[in-house]
Length: 148
Image (cartoon, rainbow, N blue to C red; front, side):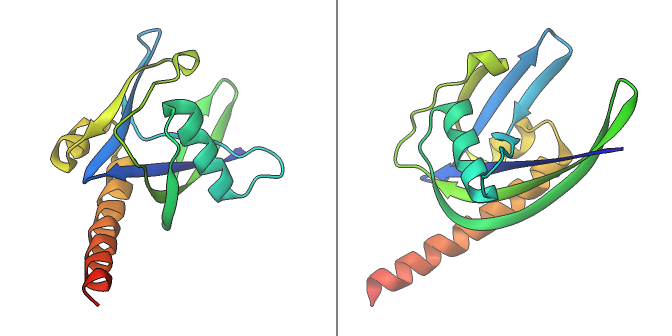
């Protein structure tokens, strides 16, 4: 069994969540959150920021660590045990541009109810639920802080 580590971001701007639509030779198709493999010398946070930037063109900022998802998948002759570390992030506008080289055909910001239904994988839906709650709490704290 092989082990793999990736990191990604739940990017939220003005309440809307950044998603990517991937289609690889009609064998893999669906909406996902941006994520990718840790490179040598990178922290998990650096990886998450880099992958968001590469896959979506978005220059995001980390708000908080959300958590880790784990799953396995098969490759020819082996099984991969993967863990993904997720970060709640924000951007400063709605711009995004999908990375065509990675077979992303569309990217955009969606309301929570749309995003939760669009996401392909249950583990990403769970991460989105957790991240969105953190986002709401973060905004409430920011509002209280501004009133002081």
